[in-house]
Length: 506
Image (cartoon, rainbow, N blue to C red; front, side):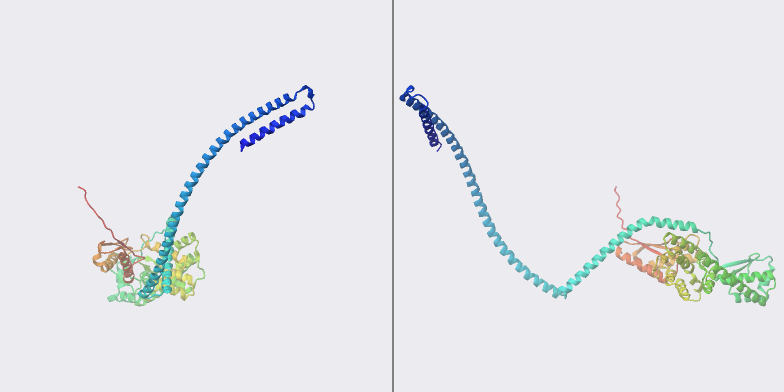
């Protein structure tokens, strides 16, 4: 194609040159240039153009052939690449066809298996319903109930963890509050005794107190209910009674009789009557002291008299009046620190042990009697609960009730506040240990009543009891102690189970 185009271009060039010469001839004198010369020059020019055209054609031909060769090579390479791709596509198509066939087969097998599983599931469902006696809906409800219970247990666990964290943070603060309370209310108090002594200047007084054939001492003991001990102790007459009120009346009456010097049944009766009147006035004064300590100016007069008798009642050798004042002061400090109702706490502390004044008349725990007295005088139910729940056998319903319990426990447990006789202490300790020994039998290795009987520590044999059984046993022992034993405060039952493996390297 390019060769043809070159020839045409050369012819066009020659013709153009010839035309040019013909045209130029018009402007040149024809006579000056012969026709042959013009023809020769034209032929020469045409020949030169043709040669140039042939050369250019040859060059273009070479270029075209080279380009055509390159194009053929590229075309061959593309054809090979296309053939390779086509081959791979054919192979992939075949593989996809095979996989498609396999998938069809597998899909059919899966469908068949699903139909079989569905049939089996229905059979199992029917069999489960038959065995369990529950329908699907009933089983679902039961499962949901179990899930709800598990969630509640999880929530309880989280709550316990949160409480533990709160306890860790609040323990130090609680210690600070308690230490400050005890420091501010610390008192020096010696336990009461069951005897009173009266000093006499002359041993002859003892004879007049005894009287002829002992009639004076018999009359005195009958009217007061107190034992008069006239022994070889120099210049001393002792009055013995477990009732401090009777002992106080007898002390006042006998002191008056000895001072007057006239001792006979008539004067004894008169002295005792006057002593009772004086003690009655003293009781009212004591009640007023307690009411003022509690900031309770409008207290009922009947309640005031009951409170006044606290001075003449003891618990484990501890004066109820001193104990009540101490509990009120402790309760006030704790209530202020905890932002509780201070007035309610002080009044509850004032009345928490008033029932002990009547325990010799009413067969009931003293704190229950205290609650009954509070209800008798139409006191607020929140106050009544704080009074009667201070031993925790009745559920406290307020923070004030908890404060009363804590204040009472601090006052009763501090060193020197209460005391037992040696024999009573030994009996109480042995009784606590015997409860554990009787209930656990061979499972116990050692039993120790420690902290003055406030904790019962039991070491069990690990081979004969599990941890779960040990928890149950601790609860049973604690409940038995509550029902059968008398003790101040609380008794903590601690079981210890320890397994040791010991080897010696030689």
